[in-house]
Image 1 (tube, rainbow, N blue to C red):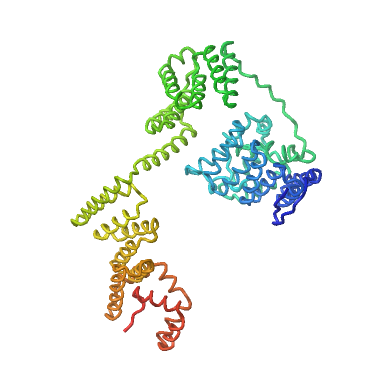
Image 2: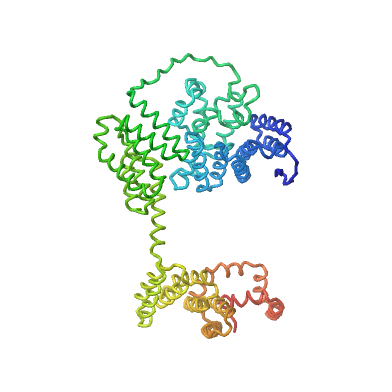
Length: 604
């Protein structure tokens, strides 16, 4: 068994030493609780060296690295944790967090989704998916650069979010109790106000205050959608020694709160029984026992026929059973949509806006599977009119992208592309260059990997004097077929017309390197050489040529080379010595040739 340590040493052990691993883990827990993340990482590294089969050690060390903002290492450990224990949701939280802060938003979304399949109600996974999805789709204010700073440790830039805190209080009575303490909440508000103006000071202040009152951290984390009880130092990190991380350092009088009465269950006996059947159906569906799941949903529908969710869930089973059941599902879903008001009248809330939206989303998913993208998009838009939520918006965006790709792929037809190319060639011969370009445009849409098509369109663009566009096509052509000599010849022509003679020379030389006998490249190169010679002797400065040359990064690099600067100075002061230096240095000869071709250096 091999364990990779931070130092890069790879020790090998015959079997894990779980006792020593546990000792190292305990030291790591203590260091993490004390916010000494670097020391904690060392102890967890030692634990891994004693037992590299324990997924919790990698999870804990990933948390340390995230707190130190070493996200590459955090991702490595998160990935190893998931590999060792793929059915443990917390590992996906670690991996997804690291991917988020590395701005790998697509990967982060996939990781959080995988974790939610194991734990659909996990708050940390839900929040992580929300933030990653927002960042992936460029939602304003989303992403690493906006809002909260580092993950796990970099808490700068946080803002007070009463809605998130209220939601956390509903799930966690401890947070609800903290919110009743006015002194505590004043501390939290004071710290959070620094988020917009001084995030660095905010982090420092948070660290100081939490030393005397750890409840502050609990409240802050709750506003970020994270339950402190699930953070390292509580469950997998074995809790805090002496309970210091979960209780205040000074006794606080507990306020007696009136017990909240549970809302009365107004369901009828039939509805209660129907919900029980639905729960059993859901469990069977997750186990892929589809026929048994259908039986449970049918029993639920029999007990309460006026509930959209039972029918919606039944249709989800049909979708999984295969394409032969899709039309049956569509028929059932359309039927309940048509009867929504009747259903709501018989069972108020049985066809609420949210439930109708779920049915419409299910219809959209079926039509997407049937590759009927337009209908699917229509249903997603209808769902948004019922309940405008993030899940539906993201599904719609994904579908629109899939449709765009499908439409593009479906349009590809090499035979039709060749027809367009031949028509374009006929127009070109007739000097109808605009019409020729139109045919080549269509040909490229039909077959975007045909190098000849780009070369032909470049020829038409050259005739139309659209030189930059012609160059783009020739670059694409050579990317598809680097040995296509014709493209180099045409590239030389374009550069010649743009008075970029040094680039024209390069294009012709590359073509001749592939085919030394190519007449077009040979003649083109000779024409460029003559033009350079003519320009040098004329004594006149071509401002357009100089402007093009000075915009060329290669020419700029040559001119910033100290050796070249010394040579140019030497040419003015001692031409003979400069000539001798150039003859003995091939690199210098090449640079001078390019500067001459570009019109920067002149002779005569």
